[in-house]
Length: 400
Image (cartoon, rainbow, N blue to C red; front, side):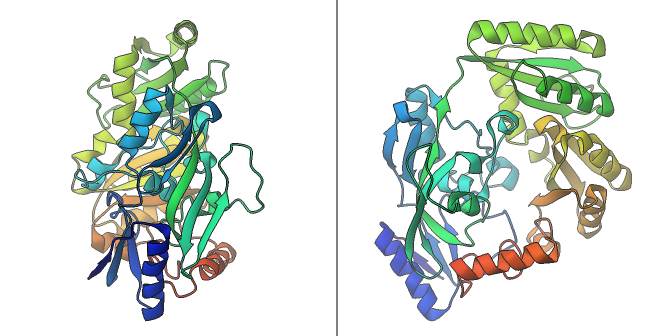
């Protein structure tokens, strides 16, 4: 296996150009923490992007940061924390879940996979914070899109196209993101002893309230455990901001939901630990014998879909995003489970296999199968950026 380690955009173009000339595919790798996502790749070459790193421009007053795509998230977080800012979409850390604990998450990897944490319900997805980039296409051409300001109009919004493309369209060399002020403090309201249907109603009401809830999750009775939560079913609601405002909104939520179950409140340190555990999918890390699925549906259907799957197959589950994100851990072999999960969705949602054996990831559609017209459009987009299919070929689906 040949390993290219470019140190500049020109060297990256040369590496992709060499693969293009030989018509031999390459795998794009930086921190390596997400190699287990998508379908297994078998390529003769690797383009190692780790040296395309470092913060290149950061203007806290402008709420914009530009960095090499392979910059570790730890370096980004240090710089942002020093200025009292953050990546508001709360990038999730799945290294433990995927068994990649020794790698370093990178900013470009998070954006390329469009991964967002619990704050997505308030702040939006990773793609909503992706302002611009510079990259090399599968044609071995350097190109850029977007800009380095929050308000920017440059025609096609290519950053949103790159977000979630898993390196199948271009090799990102530099990325620009929007950043936001870090909350002064945070608190979490717990409502325990709640049934699934009631939990959906409660989270919906909280997110629709004026209390600016920035996280709404549900751990069902008898389901996965978090050390900071009681054994029975619990809805958890997070509020963030200035201390007086957080205290007021926390108390208001406690009053409004007092009749629906046993209530309690967590302080800032406990809140940070709880939502970190939810973000890393802590309950499923030790369930190594189970495949893990991430299902996106309308928030009102989260419990319905989870219960339908649990009735048909051995599954444990919990909800995030106010019910719009269902985490499922099912026993392998998973061919039948995949069909059951997608049947429960009924075409109105997306099911992604996040963790599974290479055999399972090769046997079932890892990402939600697209309707024929959309699949044809995806192939045309792939052809436009990577006509010889040399960048991460087949990682998302045949021909993509």
